[in-house]
Image (cartoon, rainbow, N blue to C red; front, side, top):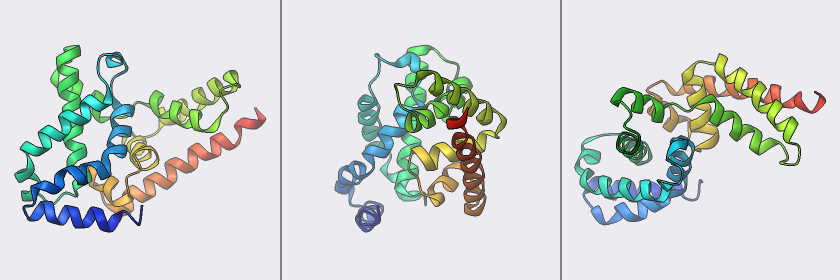
Length: 200
């Protein structure tokens, strides 16, 4: 990631200065992380109807139309383009599921504890141990349900979407130190829980 940062920063500076031609290369730099975010947050009822690649294409088209808004703002490009991707998903929820406006916003914005627990368990248990995996998922989901929603979001942003602490803090509208403290505390709770599963 450190090797890519100078390129990202150079492209972002050019885009902010008026060079619209760098939008494509800059978008490609962040495509993988955006695709992960879309995959994690797209409603399961839309599986088969909408491919994450379709959301990415719509996001890019919308970003082209909103370049002046990026230049007028001080958000980092990743945070800005992520917001556009999120709005694109909200629009798709409304179109395909007829979800009410506020419900769609909440559904897309907040990572569900079941999604996060599945991601943790999928990364830490063997598929051949289905019963242990399901037990682990249930325990992690219980722990996640007890957390504040913002702590679950910090986990999702940092651990699975691969955002930096500064980027996660910007997305959540909190101080960097608060984002860092919440992430360490939430991850520590889950790691402690996972560490004890092998003996259960």
